[in-house]
Length: 159
Image (tube, rainbow, N blue to C red; front, top):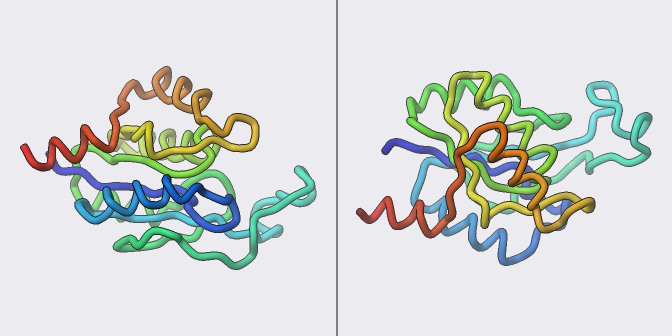
């Protein structure tokens, strides 16, 4: 199966665990991988005005990827979606931070772009509302159905 990995917002701003970063690195070494990072631009997305906080204005992806796309808000950029579509993959594996917000938003964007989003449940972490990510995983299953684990993906690559 042709697949790619989308790494959502694994950057210092959101304090990912070392275990999460290491796990994503292992998977990214075996697949075409792109990453998104969320940077603050109040003129684009009013985080400070509406929520009283904002991501950093400068940050970097903590996992090496073939390409990194900067976004200003929850969703993925048109450029990132076009890049993934250009890879002609059968599914896009999604992992990263803020399972019930930015990761879920990535799922909607991928789905709306005609791609097949699949959440890697053990390589995601929720927001401060639910660090376990279980709320986001439940929402993902409800909306997209497709979930997997890193071990299942790696086993499929060997088989």
